[in-house]
Length: 239
Image 1 (cartoon, one colour):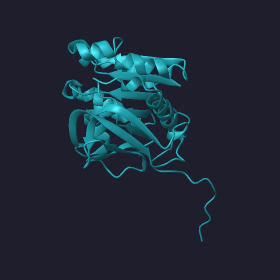
Image 2: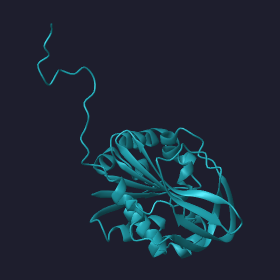
Image 3: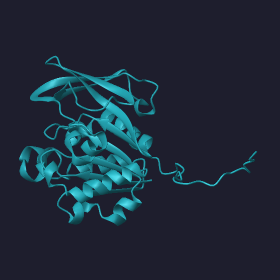
């Protein structure tokens, strides 16, 4: 499996708190733990040529992991369209935290993907609501994070095909924090935790969920359907 971890890599350059937590970038931490499962893991960032997502890279990518926050509008429209098309063609997509507002995710969802939010260093308890799903393998009844950014309902997304996690926050809100979708031949997993000023991606349970999610969205062996006018497979007898 070929995995690409994409990240704006802007907070790490501009915010010393984030740089201290993620000196190699959020993408670096995620790529490191994904390499425990996959040999071919690479990273790409916003300021690279074509955002690091050239045709050659995308054509070879089985799963794309996307983290974005402060620079969604800087992603080129043509590249967002290419990523969307690759998902429709079968590439898996894992969308993390504020990437709910990315051009790619909004194009695939067809909605505003808006929500409530608050930064107050509050506790999050993320409950597993589908314990039979492969993405929850190796996870207990819930994951508890001491400090996270609050995301609250209503989350303006289409009704998920599968709801995996439901979060409760110390301030009282709840949120659909893990959800899956299918678009064309592609599978999508949205996973909420991961605010840049908290060390969330060092949490082993969060890492386990992302590792499971990458495996689940991998769909590269799915048959390619043929569309258009079709010749019969059997002889058609006319009367």
